[in-house]
Image (cartoon, rainbow, N blue to C red; front, side, top):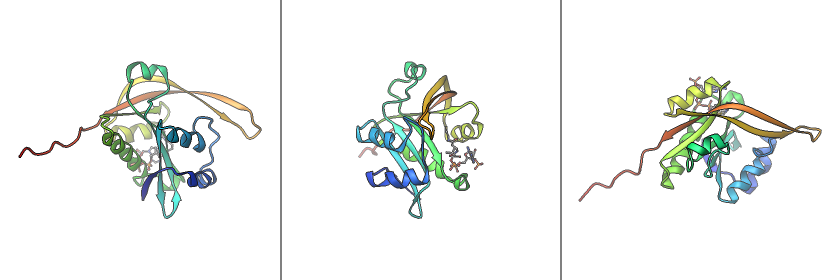
Length: 173
Ligand SMILES: CC(C)(COP(=O)(O)OP(=O)(O)OC[C@H]1O[C@@H](n2cnc3c(N)ncnc32)[C@H](O)[C@@H]1OP(=O)(O)O)[C@@H](O)C(=O)NCCC(=O)NCCS
């Protein structure tokens, strides 16, 4: 498996393989934030096909409850492995690790992510990867259905944070 930032030419195949009706979470919206320098949209590839995604939002979580206590903490948003038969093979963990490595390369020593209170399997994975619960918040998002009608959603979530190890110190001469 390879993990690489999304490119312009990937948008078509992403939409074919993993269509998204989310307003802020569409592939185009995530790519536009990457182009603006606000995020890095990571895509895992297996045998030439995209098998998921994760957007590292350098601007942090949008929820005010989280921003109040974690300003400056980037967020892994939109973590997905698709199709389902490819889950539990390490792709999701690989995406989280890739996001953490990007952060360390930027000198950022903390990473955050949100998980729905109704998603205990994902929460168990994040706990195994070293993430600890911090603050409860409401994730407000919207999607547009096939008839063009916009729907607002509000999911109760927990924000998790992990301290990342700093750069390895050079041995003194
Ligand atoms: C959560 C998710 C990204 C993890 O990716 P993954 O490639 O399955 O993760 P890994 O293989 O690295 O680790 C698997 C572990 O993730 C957890 N997990 C979370 N949701 C899971 C799911 N729907 N199916 C399988 N494992 C899941 C399990 O604890 C699992 O452990 P196990 O293999 O011992 O059963 C993936 O399962 C997924 O896309 N789920 C649906 C979308 C989602 O819930 N995203 C997270 C939003 S916070």
